[in-house]
Image (tube, rainbow, N blue to C red; front, top):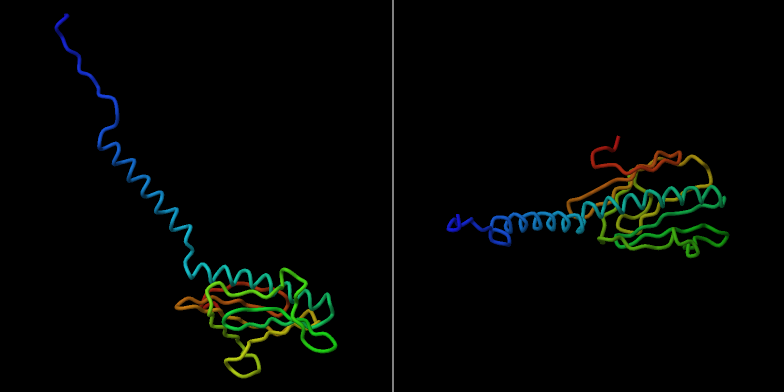
Amino acid sequence: MAGVATPRRANGFTLVEILVVMVIIGITLGMASLNAIPSPRQDLENEAKRLTLLLQLARDEAIVRNRQVAFEATPERYRFLVRNDTGWVPVTQDDLLRERDFKNAPVRLMLDPPAAGIPGETMRVTFGREPVDKPFILTLASGNNSVGIRADGVGHFTVIEPGEQQ
């Protein structure tokens, strides 16, 4: 029995095992990088969600302050203003209602029904002191992507997909 050789298993990994691990790592990194880089569509939806909350806050501020509050936007940025005895004053003391840049400017803005004014100028939505306002849909568009914000006139603001305007 002294002359029988037993097969030895070499220490280490086989080429197939290493390739399987490499494929799994590659797939995991690919999925992580896709989630880490938001698409322009996601950026626009996130901007609309943030704006929905800020419009709700501006409407509530108008009622609480008993003064008109306006949302004013250009393709590059937006801000909120409060009407006092001398006219419109930008909100500067409130970190939530401060002036902000759109993330992927320029953004095309469309208001339905259209606001009075000259097309191409700054768009403005004014909230009065009353709890009921005129309903509207504000559409944000960038490239081929668009998303809307529906205001029902009684204080509810929701993000809607294109085509959900009824």
